[in-house]
Length: 201
Image (cartoon, rainbow, N blue to C red; front, side):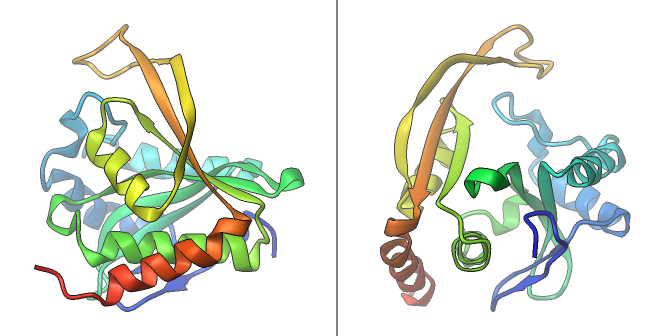
């Protein structure tokens, strides 16, 4: 199996399946839940741009730099997208990113399980040395979520990118870089399993 081989990852709350154009309508409905594309510190596709975003991700898969998934809920409906991206197969490193979920499933077991499935595949099937996460300095919800996984902050890339969002054009993005390394995976795995089994209040 290569880093870009289509694969399906299945859990109790979510299933990650190879992204396809057939997911378009569900994903348009999902992105409208919370109007996620309006957040200036994220890069979430608009409803009108969903087809192009699906094609962009599939194109990157063909070049060997991304493995895109549609995120399905327990009913089989697509509620978001996630990827392995910036794939560095020679050094056995990947980034989990370009992730978004409809508002209704955010901060739910679905998100935790998706990360558990992706990390298991990365470390136990692809034999990764490290898995990386990146997010905008001002995306505090994303940063808290990454830290809850057990990832550690490697550093902040200052003035890393130019923001293209209509509400922040020209602003410079500081990017927070986090990672989990292979030796940490057993502890992180136990932590995620605990989070998935404990009662939620």
